[in-house]
Image (cartoon, rainbow, N blue to C red; front, top):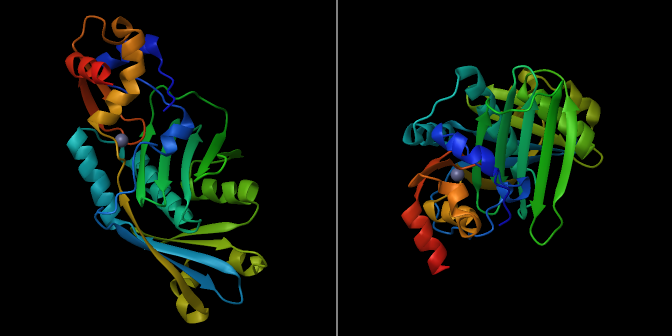
Length: 296
Ligand SMILES: [Zn+2]
């Protein structure tokens, strides 16, 4: 795995237990070492439907259970977000999951959504094959931009990675994602809140009735199955899971340890690092890293 580690800021930030390194975006989407986990517990169910005569795809799920796991993760790692930002991250997790469910099985996606005001970066990533969804938000060390920027990255098995950047206005997640669809995917998509944790996404397919799609509102979504002919396409499971572990953190830090152990640890015996995907706090001791490097 390629990684870019900012050495100078590493020790300074370690003291504050903040994220001490960045890994390049592509490797943040998928951890290449992880294998599909066939024994993974089931997660939330996302259903996709085709709307006949309108040529649109509907994806819908209740995110209650995934949000519970997200909060358990926060509790376990002892951090908490400001409620306003927390709500935005939850919307981004829902939007990405519905997007992933509307895409082929062999794709993994990552979105970095930069908001200028409030100054905030949301990072969410999803892996269709493994049914994993995870994300976190950053309010510190965020480079200020004069406008919103939506960076989408996709990795397809045995394919070239794809990357696009779209600018947007405002401070809301769903309009930002809709903008990404219009600009980058070149087809419209709409997001709706069906219940407190129940979201619906409708995206255009070839020969879509775009006027119909654009006319949809909350009322129309509530009665969609009565008004339209929906055929179930797929049911997929997704759960909150990163896949990061002590082992993976050792692997990330291994090459630095070989090249510059003093730069890494200095006087310290312990490094505290945050997973760049989910924010999980990991503690790596000098002893453990030395053992890992000498065994490799
Ligand atoms: Zn993680």
